[in-house]
Length: 389
Image 1: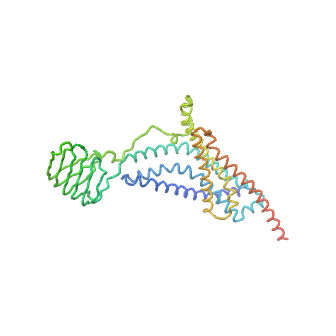
Image 2: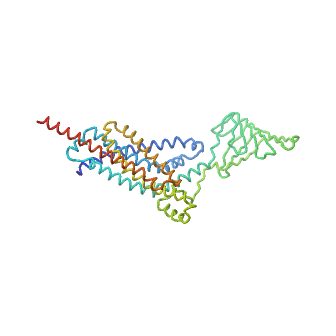
Image 3: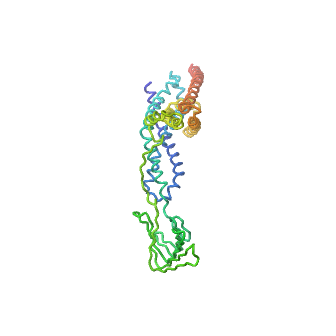
């Protein structure tokens, strides 16, 4: 029996790791498509962008592991069924439950590791990701210089240039509209100018050559001032153009371990009426840290009988079925979370009911599969014996 269990484990591992990497990559690519457009124009260091997506890998792993267990179980049992290996093992007296046992053992190990991950790694990664996301959001985009286009990215200034040397940040035949003083709107024109950003001052320095300054008084139409210059410097303050990291001592429910949340729940229960919604939110997150890892066991119960029934189709069919069941599971989870937040059902029921329902479906499928296998295997055995005679 140990040889069979070892064989089943080896059958499970390749599709698990392959599907885990594939699912993680798909979710990560979807996140990149959603977020890269908001980050790309910020002028961030590539290492900061990589750090942002790396920190988001934590919640991706928490979702990908149960899905990978379902895909691997479906794939391996489907292949064994298609090659009639399950029939041969059944004929040798090995039951379906015995074949499932090593998968349940692997799922139990993954469940334990995922629980530890959800309480020790995921909260810290979620916290760092939120803080970094806030730092990125506060940073203003880099200045995009385009010829013949009005540039509104400079605070209280509008810039226009007929020709731009992008390499040296040199502008030719430029016009600047200064709106820093509403009473005295000012227009500055110059033959050429050099635009530099001074990080220490968080300001742009615009060095102008051969130009004029035209100034008016919005309260006095008769006032007009014209000044010619050979050289001039305009300093334009541009706060938040430099990326700055900040610290945050606050942590939301998704940034705390189950133990830390439970300690806060005990304090909030001193006034349960006032803190009812927060208590429900914390309790939902506490149960979620355990219910999603337990889904690894539940998905083995569903994947094994489905794999036997599907037989052929390989990883593609297994992945498709896995997505369907996981979406159903996730819909129950999200719906339950919303109901728990509104105190319609308890947080425990909201987070554990999907596991209970899916587990019952899996047990029913296993029982029906076992009965069908018994009938099929008996007829094949009798036919085989008849041919031998």
